[in-house]
Figure 1 (tube, helix red, strand yellow):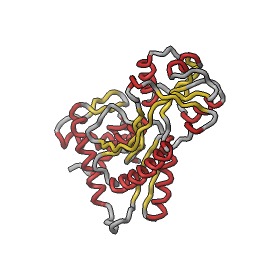
Figure 2 (cartoon, rainbow, N blue to C red; figure 1 turned 90 degrees about the horizontal axis):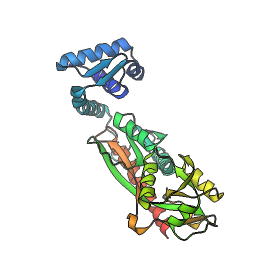
Figure 3 (cartoon, one colour; figure 1 turned 45 degrees about the vertical axis):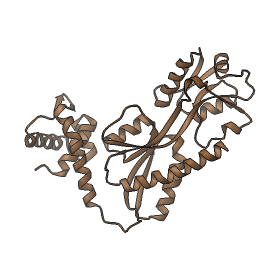
Figure 4 (tube, rainbow, N blue to C red; figure 1 turned 135 degrees about the vertical axis):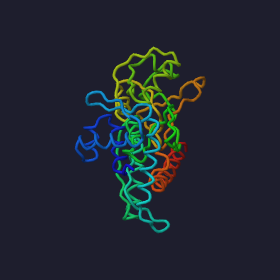
Length: 300
């Protein structure tokens, strides 16, 4: 029977699509990875990869096996875990977050590490789509990201909070409606390659407003700062806990009711049944409490 090491190599090849890159990840030679994959294929009695030059892409048979092999490796890792005392958290966890969640996540992780010295948590910041891919590939245990319409059977989604999309304009701006403000001023756009940017683009098209695009950035706080400096106006999610509504430099306008109150939904992605799920669930629960308090203070 193939060893767990062979199966880990299979997961690495499945993720990278290359024997050479997988070899770097698992600290083996390319020849060793090639031998392991041939051994697995021989054992299962069918080819699992489409090989072309330096590439090795899972074929239909390989894709069918992938969830079960990932589950088997996770189960083995869980069996190796030391049994900690009730209420104690221990072990290594990797968790990612989009920038707007990073402050809360870092605060919770820092407190948990003080309370549980045996707990080792690695925190990574990134774009939602990149973090979701890392969770799916097993490189991250969980990630706080913007919700996607694409659902994956092996991934669990825990909703955390919603952020309404709003027009953010300088306080001195003229115009009484979102449509009037957007039509009459330079538009500062959030990155359309990202989930939030694509959602904003759909809202603008539904609104039917001809915006005068000035620039496009992948940084919400930078866009808000440019609005403060009266460079232009923008459409953004009203960040959880932000003070934009009370800022004397800003004017926040709601989008028309006929758009159905579009919101950006934030939650935690995690691989179903992964080894440290009790840790990621605790982190999620504590973050959720803080997000709720911020939302209540923002609404007050």
